[in-house]
Image 1 (tube, one colour):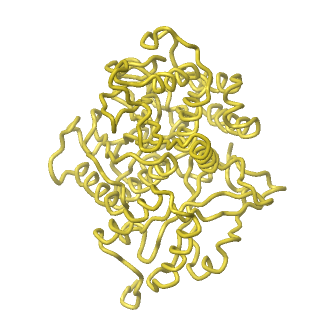
Image 2: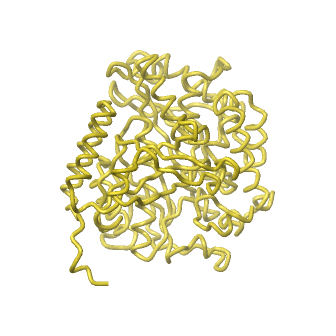
Image 3: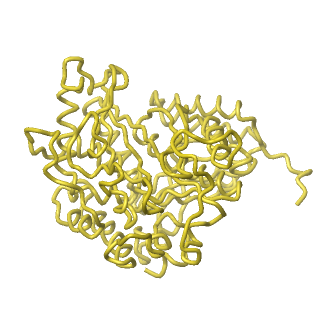
Length: 476
């Protein structure tokens, strides 16, 4: 179709970066929500080139959903955006299906026109129950509430950054076609840090990095990973809800860019047996009044007593929360000790087989790194389980946190059993959400062979919660 009559907004990447960094700084400084709302409404009203607002929210398994609202309609109706919750897996039953979306105006992104379409902006939404309260199944809302409580009660700011690995495969919809092809085709076999300028993997990484930069991600580094066609694109620390939002956007951008290049970005934890899988190493710290509470120059590994107690609690509950950190059948292929698998329930500064690593840090950067997280997990559940466990969980007061006496499960059935049996996960999520989440994971497991075996089965790909196929999801 001709575009000569269209005049929708299409800003340069430099202009987008400036706008997104300004919005990010407002969020970081906790600018009053009412002030931000009025500023955004004025922008949408005044900017004639904006045609639609894309509102994003997340279901219980971490699947990202998006609705486009006409800008003029949204300006009039943003306080009453209803949708059918019974159509979202893990949300309400049909008899109580009406839910609403509240706009989180601080989580506002100015979008590149060549990736998301001209004249669009993105914003995350809060899921609201019919009585006006936050919906219990909205994991983003659970995380947001917990982070707010910690800031108000303890003056804590919860910080996180994620190293998200993925694979780039030849062809569009490589995952959905796996049942027919039975394989994934690499686009690059160069390996760690190695790709030639202009080859398919390097072109993909460069393009994604440019989009992230324009969206205010504040990139750090990017490179091919150890396995063939594997990538990692790193960006800076953020407050915990913003960090989880960026995980969703990161994967969305990667998939969109890959599709436009005629390829598939996959975040299956172990799509190919025999090579390293993909992880989502989750770096976390807590600050108070601008001070990093995990830093102690005299502490063991320069980690403070607060930091050691935090990781002790996570290790104590390692098996309880494993299902939230590794939420798919395929994720348990990655917890294989032959490939630097972080399946040992211990902490170490050097051993990459440890569930938690203590990286070299300083007063600003000191943190702990939870290495056992898979890239297909719900980022809001990951952040909630890590921080709430680290702050409020039980501690075994293990004498030697560096010695592995226990290991993470090697299959999803054991993980589900541990999750269901743990009193801590009931405290963490509430009985209702815990039960719904466990039932969803049980349904996924029961669709796949119980024994993983030595090659990837079609079911663990085709019935994976991030492989977009509504027809198959509805067959559970």
